[in-house]
Amino acid sequence: MLSDTKVVVRGAGDLATGVIYNLYQAGFQVVATEVEEPLVVRRTVSLAEAVYQGEYKVENIIAKKTEDFDKIEKILERSQVPVIVDPKAEIINYFKPDVVVDAIMAKKNLGTQINDAEIVIGLGPGFTAKKDVDAVIETARGHDLGRIIYKGQTKPNTGLPGKIKGYSKKRVFKSPDNGKFTSPRKIGDEISVGEIFGYVGDMVIESKINGVIRGLLKSGIKVKEGVKLGDVDPRSIKDNCYTISDKARAIGGAVVTSILSLSRG
Image 1 (tube, rainbow, N blue to C red):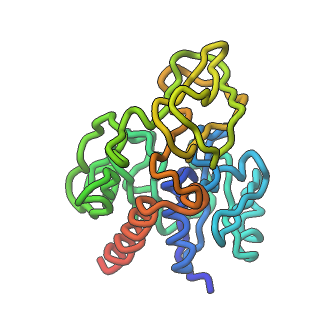
Image 2 (image 1 turned 90 degrees about the vertical axis):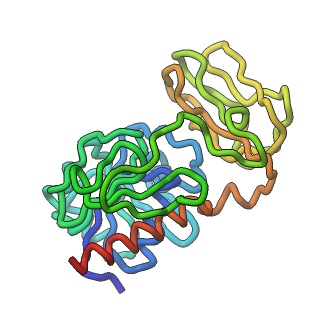
């Protein structure tokens, strides 16, 4: 049963999907926003994929793309999550949510303000609780993952991916230049050191470790230098490619907890 509490989640990537999943399970009315061409790499567990496919399912949640604000209510009535291409989150003025969650993961604030809703929450670096949001959720792996910060900021962005089986930078692919990204691979493929992951223009990108491809940007997208193209999971557990991660679930649970806590005043 849906509650009366309306939530807008800015972003629908893998971590945002973990947030949406927890909110959905708790009965909140959730609407997600995205950009016209989402640069998500863990597409099999990102509701942002609905932007490309029209409709997409992650675990038991179905996301439905719509470009019409007036269709949101009907999608919610079908127990689905509306995903709107709305980079500036103009839906906030129309939907009038009780809660706004900035889950863009841009490492900086792209426009979220503390007066966007009664409760405003930011994920990760770039937000200051009591200034531009009511609470910030720690997104860095480790002991403090999912910690709710009601005053101040999270740990600063290190620029380094979290370690998995001792691998950090080596497990992540980033674009070496501007150009079109293409790849013959798919998420869930096994890959070994030296094998081709993909291309940016004519530049070949090879894997530096053995594992399973967990993240892979949609082929054919134009990228800029430094953009994340994908990642390899050295644990080589294929099932992990198709379910919401432990990190995303922890962050999602923290968002629900912070909403309930802040609702008490």
